[in-house]
Structures are given as structure tokens and as C-alpha cells.
Image 1 (cartoon, one colour):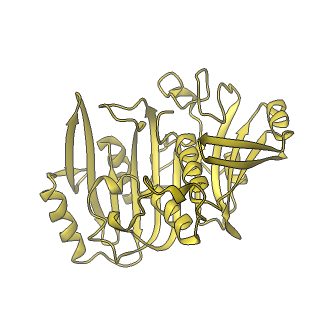
Image 2 (spheres, rainbow, N blue to C red):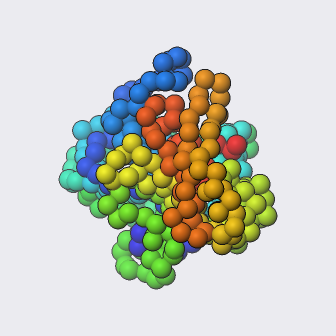
Length: 316
């Protein structure tokens, strides 16, 4: 957390060990009718949450090279969420995926760099660190991908030069203030034993530009138009990773009480997909949404909910 810029608004993390799956290993459910009711396996659930902090990593086609490499910890920080650009449907943002491998990359580091260069990346330097930068234009917009290996077991993949420069500077020397400081109330709701978690502390200074902000706009589906919104976090229950809890914090205690009094909500995002979400309030101003990830369809839609709540994902 100390490596992230101080104005980072959201983070998502996965604690290893786990292997990076190659793209070809991922299941293709688009034409799978059984997806609606198929039971979600423990492996499927873990894989879905392991991939969340690797979002930017997958912008480079490097997964096959690292298929046998073990990840000790992965974290992605992001800020400045904006409308999609260049004809895409995914929210724009500034951020960096940080991947800490269990062992040194060794000769793989050279293979990764060669693969990036073959894919059109060019050599550059940011903050004294050699990086590979790839830029792609689409409908008048420029999409940037930056790969850096500042230490023998650490890989950074960013989409913004300034954000990466701050990460590299903070890696070399301890800086204050840190991103998402420990006194934020969101941390009190997070089980330190959770392997998979994410947190967002809303930044009111970005409200006018951020379509996912709850302040004065349409906001997220679960925190829309809440002038007293504080933040949101998610975590898989470390004792039962089939149980996902998304927690919203707000100063509007009456709103939380009214929502929690319903006990549950029935979600039907598309025909054939229907599941129940339990609602409860463990303390004033805190609303928990509890998902049971028993089916692949529930897992996939809960991931979409998480991504958008954290400022990412599709522009709904």
C-alpha cells in the first residue's frame, strides 16, 4: 500500500500463492447454456478473484510466458475514473498492477521484454527505471500500456506515466501520506485474514468528472446519489470462500436501516439468471450485501458489481 500514490481511490488485492493462468486456460461461457445453473467450483471462484488485480497485466500478452510462475501477492491501485474512451465500454482510469512473484523471474524477464517488443512496445525510461511502452490509437483516443520490472521478482504494468512514476519513486523511498491510510473506517470492516479483497474510499474532489461517484450523480447501483457516502469494500470470507460480502459505508444511517430491514433482495440481471442477496447492517451506517457464489452466473455478476463499485468495469 505504501507504494501507491496518496490519491489512489481504490485497490484490489489477491494473496497467493497462485499461478497466472494463460488466456487459453480460461473457460468460454458465452455459448454455454449450462452457465446459468452450473455449480461454481472452488477453483473457478479463486481464479476469478485472482485475476482482478491483474487487470492491467492482461493488457500485455504475457500470460503464456509466466504460466508456471507463482505469484506471492498481487495488488492494483487506481484513481480518476472516467467515461470510457475510444469506443470502448470499460471505464477509463489511471492505475498500476503490482505483481510480486514468489521467486525471481530470472531469464523469464528477458523473454517478457522481447514479447512486449514484438507486440510493438518501445524502450523508454521513467524515474530512472527502464520500461517498455506500448501505445494504441482507437477512435481518436490513445491507450497506453507500460511494463516495468524494477526488481527481480516484481512486475509493474501501468496505463499512465505519472501514476507509474509515483509508484517507482515510492518503491525506492518511503513516502507520506500513504494511499488509503489505516484510520479510514473501511479498514475496520475488513477481515485481515481474507485472501481476496478490495476497497474504495470515495474522493469527492473527483465527483464532477467521475460517473461512478455517488456524489451528485447517478453513481453506482448500490450507492447512487448518496451525498454522505464514505466508501465500499468487498472480501471473500476466509472461512468460506463461497461467501462474498460487499460492504457500503455511509453517514446516512436511516438509509442503511431502511435497506437492511428488507432482509434480502432478488437480483435478475438477465433472463434465466436469478439469485438472492442477503442484506444486513452490523452497525450504524454500514450495509452488507452477502452473495452465495454457488453458481457460475452468480459469480460472474458479482464480479461485475465489484468492478463497478470500485470504479472499474462496464459503464452500466
